[in-house]
Length: 342
Image 1 (cartoon, rainbow, N blue to C red):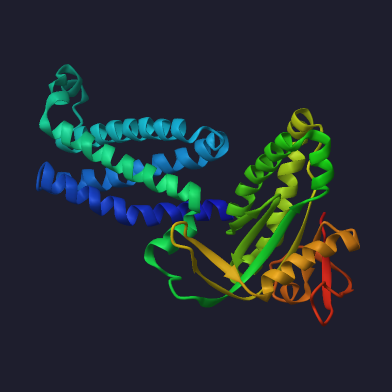
Image 2 (image 1 turned 180 degrees about the vertical axis):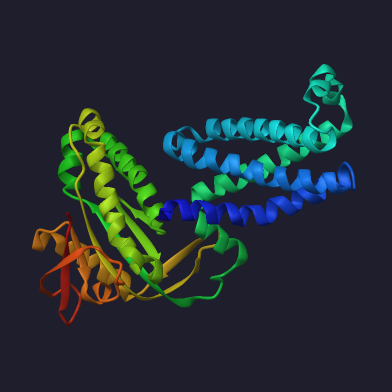
């Protein structure tokens, strides 16, 4: 089983722990206080999140992320209502009508019953809640959203994190060649293409700074299976696979470089009218300097010695020491490593 499949199963299990009990309670007290409502509620509470999650992962994330947000929300609402309707009708017939579908379709008066209206209203309410969180998730980020809601970082705390500064090469030159409007579109396409590799490797995009993306992981997630390095490798594979797209649209294929480093950082909420969870500390400054050193050493990815030493035994990458660099703003040198990709 792949890491992506494990993450999907974990997500579904988390959703089911809420959706199944809520649906059972709704069915039991709204329709019929018997075992039929419990069975139907469990089946509906499992099936609907399963279908909508698969729709989100394999349709929305692959084909619709660039769609206008209003259109996407309308499409999501339609899909969710249809899924809720057909799944609910299917299991209601199975458990309440002993599977007699002929009787159901021979008399469509149920469409006008108060129970049907209540059920559709319940489905619409769930869809509205989903779309509300989808908007916030799109604007803020899923993991950040949850932390803001429960106030994890109301008071600053110290955390161990790994950071990657991922930057486009020769951005000034490219902007001059293709124009600033096209360049912004290129940067946006690039950020779109790195989103899935970041998600697959359990990272999160902390911030965009111009044409640079700052990505972060929990240290355990970053070093397990060398996820932080695997992220860079996956981004490289994605961009190579879309060379034709970039060449036809912009006349150029973006190249990029990155620095990786980990350590102790301070994190907490910043702002009031526009809140965010911010990371501060020497680890970010050092990571930025390591990324700058890529140009000096002619490498696309450089990693600090400290982070290399933390990679677990499952790591399959080969490291090459490039030397002890005197990073700008640092009093002592730091040994840096490049990665040999197959």
